[in-house]
Image 1 (cartoon, rainbow, N blue to C red):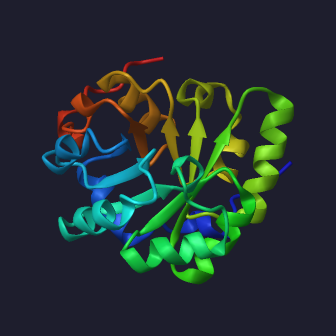
Image 2: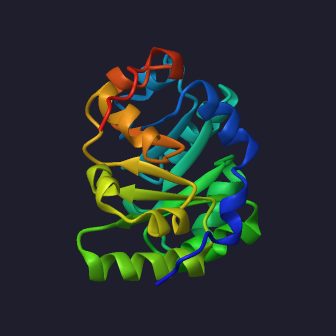
Length: 209
């Protein structure tokens, strides 16, 4: 099991650190129906999921022109292949990065100049060990840890090995975002448009544990 921070954990990409300094929220935009909500929200980083491959060439460039940092969830884009060609396709249309649970896609993304966000589901200790190994091999720019409440049960060494990380799944209230940041997340990801408008200054203070 990995006990030390991975090499990429020392520096967050400047685009992301600048965005998260103001709004530590990643908008999980599922489908095209919530695009308007995202475009009018102060958060500028999104994970685009469940958008058919035929619509990506219209949606991704439009979001990029609006000054957003767009990650495309390769695993949940209908019709999008799971190979290098798909990554080159996304890079060409202006996507900043990709999200995937697949180690092979994470490893291929960085040489193409894409930011990579490796999604891991931590459900038990054996799963945690596999996730730590995958992250150590993939060296992503960000790790998306799901579900967010599990972070409170993880040991500090495991969290360091998965840093910088985004907490996702069951992020339902402003307090959930505050809790994620308090436990070391650089941001929290949520599909609830009501939370996309929360700037760092507007978040509730952390509660004493």
